[in-house]
Image (cartoon, rainbow, N blue to C red):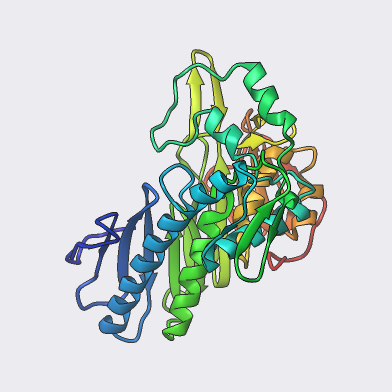
Length: 355
């Protein structure tokens, strides 16, 4: 987003981990937040600047709380839960983390296990518990991967009680919820804005967006990046629509002549291969987030089948050769910056992106 034309007021929350920027009197109002090592932005159409600034302060508090609860490798409630699971003990988590785990279990069930945040041990083994990319350390030895795979960690090993008590029948479960955390955070922010009577906003969490209402009597226009970091396509969003993407081009391991993306295939314990990028449009940011990750694993052959299981009608996939695979409903929603060299349209999964 452009930041010219407004003054920045830096404020710290949660021990200095979060900063947000407030727009001086003018519309639209924009706030920028630092959380989880990345940038979250919110562009609002609030009735007054005072309402917008109060909303920005609330968003900063939400993100600070989420980091305290969800972070997969810095001290958090999630790390304490993983330690308890390893010891065969239950652990009571805060309501937000309990809700996040329940949504992760739903994604696991819908995807037939392709979306499996219980394999956090493998994520750490591959070195992806970091904010520093690319990773150039040697890949983990096959026997270490096999040892973690032998534990067969699954999301349905967990039970989440009404009081937030989480227990696991399998000590091999090690949760890493990054595959849906951005979508869940976007939905939390949207709920907070609704409570404050703000119906029009664009929430950008690490490059993934949830659009609410419109951008001043016109749709929100967003860009889908290609694996080469150029503009692949653009889309117009309105009402309540999320556009989430996943790819092998931002977070990856690299050795001479070889690259492994950060999305792991739970069937093999290895990085998924064959797909360079996926983008999904859906009204539910959590489903859009889960689907963009899961379709990286499913690949071109299972694109339509997996999208249908997840309730997704709008998806576009770029394989590692640069060929594009797209659902009919998504084809109607995006404008390609340059026509793809190879273009494949799947069977119809629905007439619109509403799931």
